[in-house]
Structure formats: C-alpha cells, structure tokens
Image 1: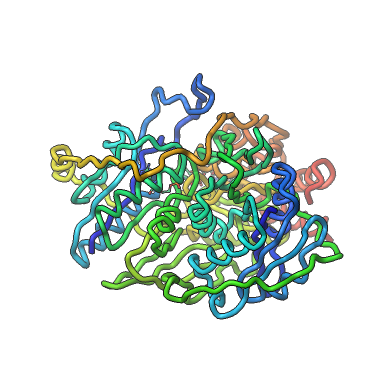
Image 2: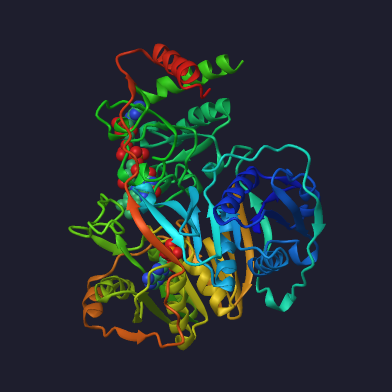
Length: 324
Length: 252
Ligand SMILES: Cc1cc2nc3c(=O)[nH]c(=O)nc-3n(C[C@H](O)[C@H](O)[C@H](O)COP(=O)(O)OP(=O)(O)OC[C@H]3O[C@@H](n4cnc5c(N)ncnc54)[C@H](O)[C@@H]3O)c2cc1C
Ligand SMILES: Nc1ncnc2c1ncn2[C@@H]1O[C@H](COP(=O)(O)O)[C@@H](O)[C@H]1O
C-alpha cells in the first residue's frame, strides 16, 4: 500500500492534494504496492475525507480532535506513522509544502527510510522508488533512488498533474491514534494569513514578478493590477526585497521561493543567475525590460523591449478585455 | 544558553554548474565555496542570543577538511567554538545521524540550522536531526524569541505565518528575514585563524549507509530565446503580447 498524505483547508481538499494522489498512484505503479490509502489530519479532516476521489484510492483515513486542533509536527508525524502502519504502507507521499517539508523528515527518520524531497518525477528503478529532483536551485537535476523497498517522497507543487476531483468518493474512516501530549513540544498558537486574497506564490499557475526596473515601491500597484487581472501571484527580486519595497516572502530565486508556474512574467528584472534559478522551470516565460541586452531575454519565450511603467497598464487593460 | 549551529559549505550561488566526469557530481574545479546563505542567518541569530542571554555558540559541520573554511568564517563572525565531524555522509539521513551523534555529546539547549542548503536543496536535515534526538522543531523561521525554557517562533507557510510555541531543547531552522548577518571583523578573522577546530568521529553506533543514492546529475534542457517585440509603442506591444499569449500559447 502507498499512503498519500493530503492537505485540506476549511474542510476542502487543497490543490496539492490532487497532485499528491497522482504521485501516490505513480508510486504504487513503480513499487506494485497494491493500492493507495489517503490520510487527512487536523480540523476539517473528516469533512475533507468525504471528497477524496475514489479512482484508485482504496480508503481514506482521517484524524481530527484535540491532539490535531493546531499544527504540531510531532503529533502530526505520529498520525502519519500510525496510518502508515495501519495501512501497511511501503511508501508515504507528501506534497513538498510548508507542512510536507516540515513533517516528512520526521516520518522518514522514524521509519529509517530515504526521503526523496521536492521531486518532479517519480519512477521505478531496480525495484526501488526513484525520482528526479532539481538541485542547485534548478541549475541541475539529480536522479535519486531510495535504497530498499520503503521510501518517503515529497512532490513539488505544480509538477504532477492533478487527479480529477470526481465521484465516486473513496470510503472514509477515522484513524485510531493516541498522542501523548507530553511528547508534543512544539505547537502552533496562531496562524496569520498574509496573502490579501491573492494566489500563493509556490502554488500559483501564473506569477507576475517585478524588479528594480519598476523604479519605486508605489509602482508595484501596476504590477498587482496585472496580477489580479490574470488571477496571478506576485513575486519580486531580491534587489527590491532587500530595498524594503516588497515583503521577503515574495522573493523568487535561489535564496527565495522556487516557482514553476505555467506562465511567469519578469517585469523590470535583469535576469541574474540567482533569480533565474528560482523560476527557470516555469513553462512559459515573458520578459518586459527596457534593455534589449538584459539576460532575462535569453530565456524568455516572449518579450517586450520597452518601459514597464508604460506597458503594464496597457497590458492589464488588454488582459481584462480578453478575459471579458 | 548553549547553542550549536549547523553549518554547511556550499558552492557560491553564482556558480555555473558543470557535471563532473563521474556523472553524479558537479565539477568542483574553479568553484568558489561559501557558507550556505541560510546558515549565515542561523549563525547571526545564535550570536545575538548569546549576546542577550549569555552562553556559548558552537558551530558544527560534517565534512572533509576543506569544510573547516566555513567553520572559520563562522568563528570570525563571533562563534566561540568549532567542531568538525569527520564522516563520509552521502544523504540527508546519514548527515543527520552524524550530526545527532555529535549534538548528543555537546548537549546544547538549542540547535540552529539553515532552512535549506543551496546545493542539494533538501531542506531536510534540521527536521531529521530533531526527529533523531526526539526534540521539537520549528522550521523556516523568520522571528525567534527565547526564554530559558522555551520560545516562540514565527515560521513562513503558504500565504501566511504560523506562530509556534516550543520548549527547549529544540531545533530551529533559519529563513531569510530572521536577521541581517554581520560581516566578520578584522580581529575576528585573526582570532578565527588561530582557533583550534575540534574533531569528533562518529563511532560504530552510527549507521552511515545511505538510504538515498544519487545515480545521475543532469543539466536541465536549455531554454531557447523566443519572440521578442521591439520598437513598438506600449499599446501596440501590449496588444500583440496578449494576442500571442491568448492565441499562440493559449495561456490567457
Ligand atoms: C547569495 C546571493 C543570493 C541571491 N539570491 C537572489 C534571489 O533569491 N532572488 C533574486 O531575485 N536575486 C537574488 N540575488 C541577487 C541577484 O544577484 C540580483 O542582484 C537581483 O536579482 C537583481 O534584481 P533586479 O533584476 O530587480 O535588479 P537589476 O539587476 O538592477 O535589474 C533591473 C532591470 O530593470 C530594467 N529596467 C530599468 N528600468 C526599466 C523600465 N522603466 N522598464 C523596464 N525595465 C526597466 C533594467 O534594464 C534592468 O535589467 C542573490 C545574490 C546573492 C549574492
Ligand atoms: N554536512 C553538513 N554539516 C553541517 N550542517 C549541515 C550539513 N548538511 C546540512 N546541514 C544543515 O542543515 C541545513 C539544511 O540542509 P539540507 O537538508 O541539506 O538542505 C543546512 O542549512 C545546514 O544548517
């Protein structure tokens, strides 16, 4: 069996969950593991568990209640380990999200299993689970292979096609797990949302990023307007983050976020290696820059040489017109 | 407060990656090695905590002798002691086992690490060390406040921040935004040069067989330049770009 660890918010499955299901099925094929069990933990887990597509998923386990009311890596890891045991899981698949990246290593350590982190492909090799994963911020791709029959994997958002969200749903059942509160020594006290209703950078299908070429922090409103017209997330270069124009959680690049959206706009961005490292796996790249020699044009699929401050409002208007 | 900071030596972020003849590693020729940028935030935070609460900062790396350069950089910034664990590590789990072995001996109140090493981009070692020691962890931290028994940290998540309460001992991994790392001072550099670096060798109780093997290192497919619109006024360029994205790329 393969255990797919899903994520939900307000009782609804997140997009990454459908990607994790696809990845879990690939893992099942690679290891001939006999099916997929899904797991949901935390507030709303029971409700979200009722909407897991049954195509290829045998059952859904959910863990709710006091021990999981707030995120606590030790408690959540115990739930994953209990579910893995209940399902006799050979491998456990997470999304490489803030949650998956935090808890997957604890699960791997407890199972003495190899963890294939932030992978973009999963396949079989010599009877073990193998994967491709970007390293050096995407400047190289490593082919990695788990040793032995067990493994843990965390899949990069947007790298696996999402499983269709269709009925019939898989049968759901509560997971029996007892967490000793004394064993939980880190716990979330409060969650502050910061994204102003905009898509989140590492999960977004479209990202609109701005750099020093926007001249002033106020001009980022022009960028935000384009982002909103496109339903996109907003990104930034380190230069503008360090200047205090944008918050650091918007930084794209080697020491910021790595994004792989379908469409990436680089506006007033020169294209330094450290920036390109964080966005070069985007499917389509659009660059807008005044300087025709800017390195960003070397990797752009489409580009406009011109003044971003003049082009942005026109672009927003045109996008709104086309989208109706 | 005694703190161990985990430090890894990595290629400079501007490095152009070439694959070595072995096909599984980068060509290290001409590569400039630096302290992992996220570890600089961890070192800085440790020094600030020491300045406030007292105690000692020990920097620790697992690696060959060359990696002592990274330890000396950390000493020059203000760390008190440096330890190199000499072990052949090949994957995050064995690295974490070697680290956990040394941390047990050093018995600090807090372990600080980077959220991710910018070479292998694993982002695992902090959580792995916490799990192996059965300690709590807070990863990707942008704000940290400590008392003698515990602390409160803010960690970055998708579209927001989690405020986490934890008890010591614990592992905390540093994200950009936590602080502004200081530069090494000249006296610091002189002192760091003379400092003895302690060696710890993992004993037989530590299993160093890797659980993940890298079987190949590839370069990503090269991107070719596309359609660049030049010499058009803003309105015409915007119109044409949206047309291309709509009709040709079918993305809007
Ligand atoms: C250790 C390290 C880590 C780093 N990590 C990152 C990282 O994670 N992410 C990151 O982004 N950077 C990172 N950097 C910084 C990187 O090297 C560059 O300095 C940075 O990306 C440049 O940002 P920029 O493109 O906004 O600014 P610039 O390089 O100054 O480019 C501005 C561009 O705007 C154009 N322009 C000017 N005016 C206009 C106009 N009116 N209309 C259109 N275009 C205009 C210019 O032609 C120019 O190409 C890192 C550097 C180091 C040393
Ligand atoms: N060989 C090592 N020696 C010391 N610390 C390390 C080593 N490898 C990783 N770390 C620490 O763990 C963090 C995360 O590394 P990684 O999981 O490899 O991305 C780094 O930022 C370091 O703080």
